[in-house]
Image (cartoon, rainbow, N blue to C red; front, side, top):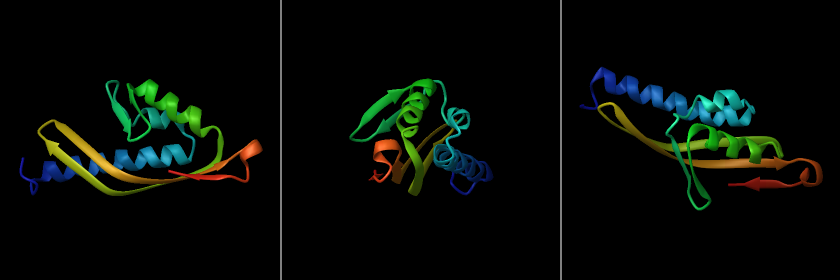
Length: 111
């Protein structure tokens, strides 16, 4: 599909909204909203860290790590979206700030 067709623009916008929902759901600790970001057969490749498959596995990983934080901020950039018919691929850069809790309350971690 040519990039100047209305459906292509609509697809890009919808995907962009899902990518943004990912970051905002994490920062607001809205785990049920985060589940809505992924399909049942989703694959999350946290480059250099781990690859997880499936909506529940991905959401469980993220929530289990981030409940150890008091505050997080996930910033997204260079979002690239490729749509080919009814399939799409998206990649982006991520800068994330994590502030610890408890014994790590004075610690800040960045990814």
